[in-house]
Image (cartoon, rainbow, N blue to C red; front, side, top):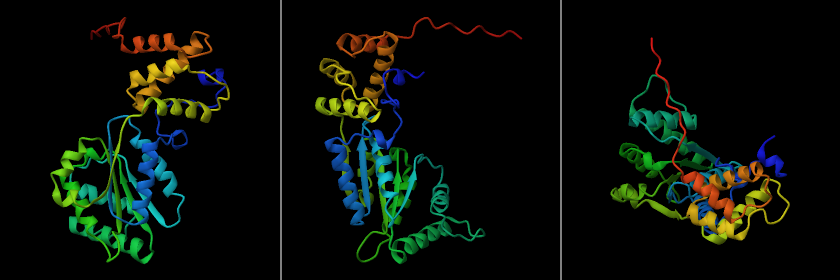
Length: 285
């Protein structure tokens, strides 16, 4: 039996997978999501979401994806691995992603760009849909891919940008984009996701437990949550990993409440260097 079922839960509450149903809308995540939806509704073009590792950017992306996929006038596309070796490789990926019609005999970079532009015109202008492309881990985008995206952002009518582009990445992306004035000036929305404060950490823990089916009270003491926030520095991913370990310890030690001593023990175990690792015995042929 899984540890969480012993605690009366139907799901793992502190998974690090980007499950939208476990996404807690903190004030800043809610603001980012609201501003994104406004920018997309107004067809403003380019939006960027930046934050440190583990601040919930990918989960925010999945939540936005869930919302947009339910809207009839949206054609939503997502790229999760943005590393491309050449411009042509990126363009071919766009053509495949958009299912853009293309003559198999025409395979130059210009042919790919024309196929993408024709798709954008047909879908965004003739069919009057919002074409949304979200690229996660965008700090990995090579300069030549950013140049292609800049070209595609130039494709517009008198009233709106045809391609709605969202770049989600780590903060290291900002200085790279700022050195490209022709790209930086096109950013219509800039959002920074920061770590959670103590009150938000408390709300996240309670929210995730509730989503997983917990109906009791006080599974985590307030002092335990304070230490969790202190150790995780408000980063949701680090918090989830620690809370997962704490619930496992709760079951293994046959305890009923996560308190301060248990958190200190879990943190000490996490920080303790690996020990007792047996060196592999070399195979002699």
